[in-house]
Length: 190
Length: 279
Image (tube, rainbow over all chains, first blue to last red; front, side):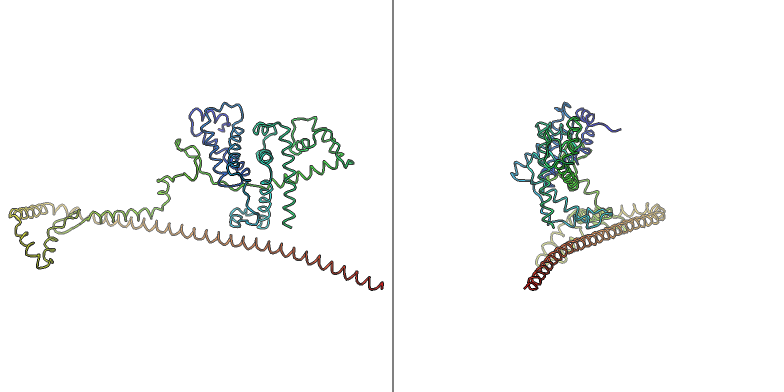
């Protein structure tokens, strides 16, 4: 039987540790992906992800279900990411595309994908990563939440605490900057 | 599509984003923008470009996380910092192959026996096991015999000073042992016959198991070696392919530049020809 998040939360509050484990298993990848895309460092993203669940676990008795559990988790993770960026006082770290780790590429190669496609895909992925790093934090957050986590505009507005129209404007501005940066990158590689 | 300058009356950026992400929250605005889109080249172009950006964004995937945050132990169920994770002592022990565990156990027993100065004897007096560092009486006598002459006299006097009741006690011990073995000899003869094959069979079984373990370990090592070799070959192949792609790209760029240069030269030659013909 598959429990909903809310049911698992209720069971966790009631002392069922397996339920919280289930929640962690269910949400650790999305939270890690959010953290990685926001701060751009694998190890720090992992730390943020784990810290998110630690805080969620501690605060679980106070969770009254006024928001979705996932939204609540996202908010914790975003706050931690924001703290990280402020603490580090720097933009997300992005590896230069020249340093493509071919060992890593080879390890992640799928049998059906040729090496040329793989290199191209990784190059594009890094180009996107680099372009995202240029964005201001609020635009990057809006794009990540919408593009990679499929949140509604309303959910994003509630999460980041701004009007819905502001979310849309940030998205438009962010996408426009990305368009320019990606085009710049494309010209540079030609 | 006829408009080249956008004349959308609402908030254009918001409308484009709503359309881009198929937001159905405001159907009236959406319908109005769709009607506008049918006539506005500018908005249609903008929308197409942003769709392209989105398709590129979809190619960005974070690296695979290496998680170890969930355990079945309620006390450690809370996610922990990987830097502060302490391996479970039982788990690393389980990771050691069985043959290595057997070898470690034998080594431990051997060292323990050595430390305890274990002395096992099986002679006419039967099986005797002695531990500790006190030398036996025979050893003491041997030590005395091998001692330098200057000290032997003093030690010999100490031996001579041993009280006479000790000899009586030794004689009594010898007599008791003789009697004891006399009564048990028959039973030992009967019991020894079936015990010997059983012990031999047990030894053979242990040897067989050890061989099986060693064979399995060798097979595992061979397969692991083959896997590592395959990985190295694959990595080398990937490196070579990537290098080839880069070389190919670089060559293409050089060819393009060369082609452009040749074209320019040709145009210059044509110009000179035309100029010289006019003159």
